[in-house]
Length: 357
Ligand code: SAH
Image 1 (cartoon, rainbow, N blue to C red):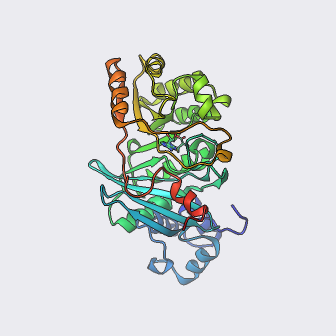
Image 2: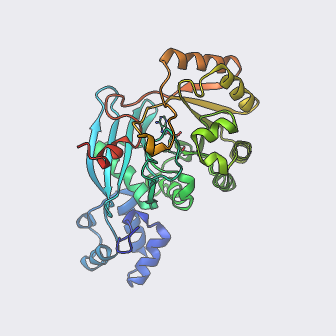
Image 3: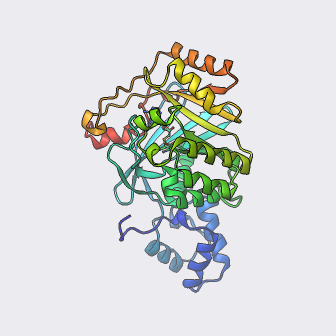
């Protein structure tokens, strides 16, 4: 983050407001008024803060960014009501977020970093590397602004957009505490999913916090050898250690872990993969989420090899699911949302950066 950038107003929790209000020599009850404007009423215009004096509003404007996200582009799916958003941050960086209406409530998929440094072969978000972490306020603002634009309450958040949450664990944990604060958005912990490519210390840290959120592990291959071929992070955190950390998460929180598995034609969709996956997961309280991979148009120089990332035929995906189920594994196929708007996550930003407009 550039040094001249003011922190997002949404980054301040109750204690931060108390400290700021004391610094401004204002009575302490101002802290709860400000907290309520920002996190409960989710106001981004100082003018609307009717019980705050002009002097204090000027101090707010001096110290904080009231709206850290500028809407650049919104795409609406005619098929299922999915909306994708491209936002520009105060320093000009671009991120994506997605609104998905489900029967059980409205869900927002947020980004946790600008870009990503994990280098997964099939992913668009990592192509230009990581620019920076998002602050807690920039994550909260994605939910608040989308809620305002859609005019509908958001009840679920998935941390599955651009970025690796475990590579930004302090801000991500703070975000989780703040979005579940009953005096703010008040989400249930159970309605939050954090997805990771498998950074073992981060998973263990989350387990120690005993937050009853849903942990999703991006597994994508059933053996260490195969995983290394598509996910460079696997070399640093081997599969057996990652699985042990996930087991610890389940033991500490009682929350079933979701294993995401992007099916890549001819690479991880064979009968041998079924056998290996069953061996890896049987006996665990696990849920497998199959994702037919979204091909990303990467150039060979982007990925450094020529592994073809192709999506298997739908029937093949269903067969893969059936074989796992026959072996007692809990499995679903991820519903494709917004198929008529833009492809994989990260592509909206990638296209723009690639000057396709
Ligand atoms: N960095 C985190 C969260 C962001 S990615 C993680 O790795 O889990 C969210 C999910 O989308 C991950 O499971 C990721 O592997 C998957 N994904 C990324 N690119 C994809 C693509 N082209 N097709 C299908 N799934 C993809």
